[in-house]
Image (cartoon, rainbow, N blue to C red; front, side):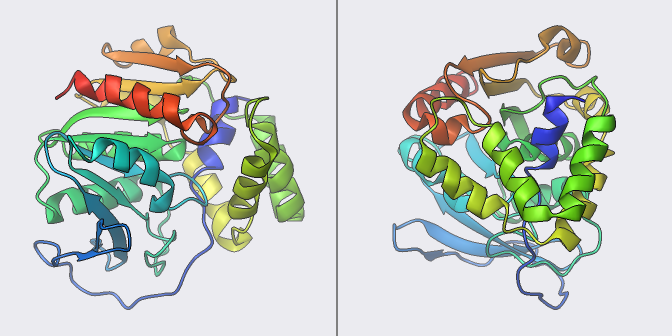
Length: 296
């Protein structure tokens, strides 16, 4: 079974938050309000009426739009947003079913999440965008980039897209069975296994706590839906350059990925696992700045 699948699949699910009644999305987003850190916070509405919370700061193009992974929310990008806000507009969002966004939805697929991201780009009138997606957020970024080629100038994956040609097998079935049988212990064991060896125990514990608070009745359907997502086909459909900032725990198959996208490359942060942006944040900030500089 491919390690990528586990990483991607287990990085999209979050316990559903409160429901919100469907309503038509405005053509543009309402004016955001400042948060305690001075960042602007606002809300847009998806095509199926789900409110999506976002944070915005800085100025300058290209705009960086950050897509979190499973059981995360937009707050996990705060450090790198502060690092890049002096030179770029930076935006992070809570995908539906996550953080402060709504969860009144039945169709939990990568394609629909990609549409949600495009809705945000349109509502905020973002013209030149680098999409930055962690784990399954990388797959979401591919889906969004294919839908908005006129807006997206690059996609940056974070420990994702390790080998788009590998298919799921018995290992994924076993993982899903374990989660269905006893979600929290199975989740904690898995999450603990995907960090780099040098990761701080308190960081591992904190991420386990967040990820494994997912509601199984939402988590499992999303895992199955994301398992069906064709990453190779999605990579084929993207016109913009694709870069990945990876930990060194899980290798990337450059040859396979470049069969589907000629402008694909990887930067590795040594000593990190599935969460390089958390395990080695200063190195990650520098790596992302180096990648984005090429598209500025």
